[in-house]
Image 1 (cartoon, helix red, strand yellow):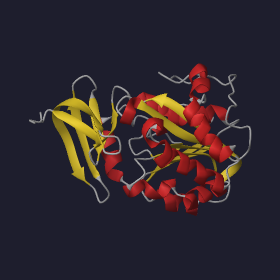
Image 2 (cartoon, helix red, strand yellow):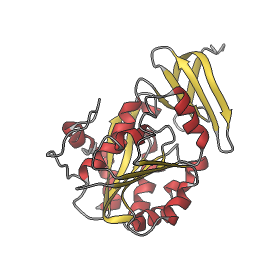
Image 3 (cartoon, rainbow, N blue to C red):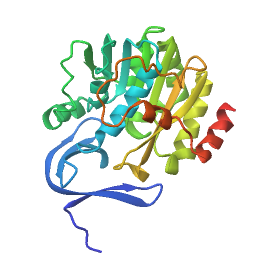
Length: 286
């Protein structure tokens, strides 16, 4: 078989398949101490960011992921002011959080400054909020940063990580989640990307929920949203609360922020569980 090198293919080893984008040129390549960071120009999808050969985002569709990682929790929380983002080096989630005027402080802690440098250079729309005085960029191990946080320091913690291996492995562990619970305020909420329900229900989502429960969260569910450049095109995020009954709450009286995907209907729809996911989560949460 002859391979066309004008196509970038993200191969999914656990469910043999791939997603490919037609590329016109490589704009950037850097091997950081942690991972390989690449930026390509593509046909139809704009610029694309890849890490270790895995597609992270494109200009065309990244709003789906960034909006759904940030806004459901920001609207579910009664008055979020202090937000910690672990990972998120492309700064898209940071931008979405800072759309909320009530936010007083956001720390983005990513282990790899190379990702943020590439985002600033090649994805200026994603990084347009980086100079907001409420934002602080930190480049260090997110597990350590949470462990060093004071008790109750954060209203909301978002984990915008790569897949659960390599530099991100510790972010899916029970010890890390115990530190998250401790670092959250009493009414704190937690969101963490949790892969594809089609392909990683047993390998990622269920182990994560077992860890969330063991770590001390009162309840957790899954947020669902489309993500066309990721495995299966269907993505999810674990959504957990320290107090019961907090996840479905949404304050519609609050001024709506400008979004391209997220709204009140999408908030409710994202919390609806497909039956096979509902059955699986019931084995953990009852």
